[in-house]
View (cartoon, rainbow, N blue to C red):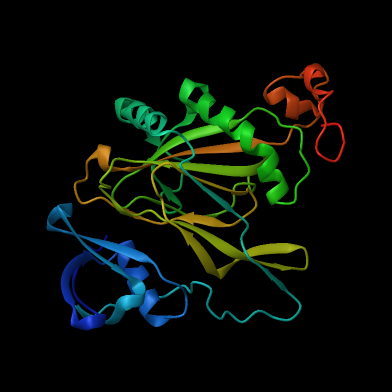
Length: 321
């Protein structure tokens, strides 16, 4: 296995500013800044490059980039952020659907969940897909996190948001089955390549990713990429173009499980577990059939029947809820 090189960069910004930075050649920031430089109209991003082992950061907006000098030379295959990929007329290019909810939980709830993650270090194990493939996914996960009180807190909060989320994505309120939930930790060099969550034989409908980590943040990278979808002849594939969502602490990102997405590599200079990018992923499943006996909590939406004490309420149009 080839040893990864250190790349010496001179980054020149508007106003005559110049910064010297050293990054490993597989650092996600390299791809971000070179992509921004090659496609200046792709949008503005905030970049933080770790210096001095993560003790200092060089921060700037990608719109400020003027030039990059690298030693040794860097040759990269750049994927375009809403660039110009040739799409035949017979196909359809669809933008990813997603919702970002900041401050999803209270600061105290966020901190308690983070404390739980840090105290549960020994419970994490290597994340898998249908078969363990380190080329596809490298991170750590607590598989049975859904049984914890912290997971149930997130589930109940999602119950409140569910009607609005379904409406936003143009979905009718579907009957909910049991909820699937995982707590993941992504450390230095870890990632999850392009995939969609409904590829497995599971009734996943909505994917909900909640981010948590220490402040100030001890890692860089780890962005969520949501890819445009090319639809043609009944088949689907991810395009080269994408939208990026930054993993901000206490942020929830929700998207239909059929959307192609990718967790970009994380760079954690300290290599400490506590500086990892933590995330709780909760999947809302569609139930195979209605449970007529369930009328409260999750069961209210699982069976599509309004609890009797709420049946008399009416909305502003006079329709029963």
